Image 1: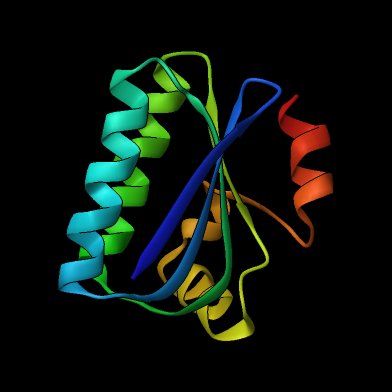
Image 2: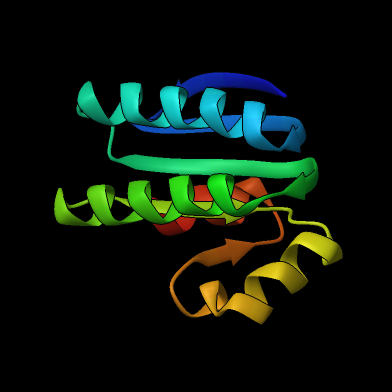
Length: 111
């Protein structure tokens, strides 16, 4: 899994690519928790190139969502492919996470 982090207008954007499997989930967990520990609680994940996510990855996202919201921030998801979106719907995560079709829409919403 590749993770690219950039900050724009006080919003931390992570561009993810690859599989969020057991190894990828560890990398993602480290990247997101490091950002949160630095006070970066407004985050967007660009998931256009994520083709798989396992329970460890989902747990990481739920944990960071909670942390960010407790600190006045959020975690928005962008460009999920239909397969990943369906996983979120099946487990009910679509009720907790806000997703957008484009990074621009997410940036406008979180700003």
